[in-house]
Length: 370
Image (cartoon, rainbow, N blue to C red; front, top):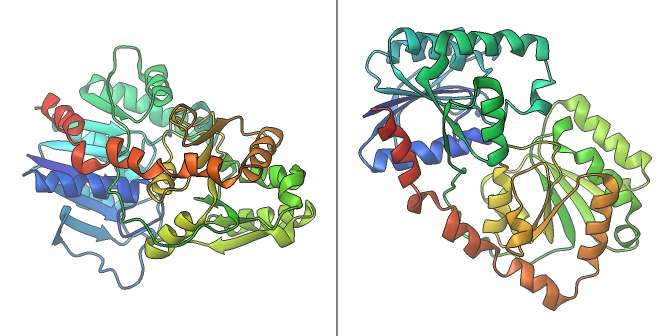
């Protein structure tokens, strides 16, 4: 079975969660006899990565298309459309990325089977951004693609979001994002709390900074807050200015984008990782942190109630006040209490989220499209 994946980002790019999740998926599909075909833009890639040339990889046939304007990815769309003829199934990531939308319309005209992963873009919070641009695209998808799609959601909330836009009868496979679990980094725990991810207003980083500022325990401790990631430079500067204005500039360290070994060591060394997002369909950093035996605090606007249920961290409101209370509680833990949290994190990921042991739901989705 040939599966076509036209995607905005793909490993080794780290410019978005799907760069890794689609890579892990295609890699494991290939190992099971499928023939993935990946057409990706060059967003987030170093100059050393070759553009415009097909290659055989551990994730199937792969090409990175040089894309100057991501909102008009004409070259990438053209390459993807050429691959449609021989593809059995088209698997799209993102609703509003133009190459995905154009490929969906063409696939429908060619009567190809379509799987579609919205990647959180259908939440009410996300739809409020550029709503006038997104509304006609959603209308066109309903009219032109309609019931020929099988959607993939990663959580109950995302399933509800999809039904709200495409109707109760739409076909949905709810499958969490699985990962290839990295080796555990051998670094000691250090005195820092961590945010790692994209810099965007929806991520709630400003609320985390405000929480640190009103936490007496944090301000009076030698614990610091490390902020890792990147986004629009002007927004990063806003966050830097905010930390200074709150009077905690000396206790907040912006460490830049991290990946590979450095990212794993940063996660492993953290006392707790925070994901205070206003909305999140999944949040792969939760699994990456737990895999390094670092517990997590995630907001209730993310699908991570299991943190409370399994004793792996905290699932809480993402207001500054609520986060500050959690920070106070974390910093009051003695070694015995803390070990009850971080000691079982990695085993939870290995048991429930290792993609090498959880391919059956994906195989079922693709078989349903035959």
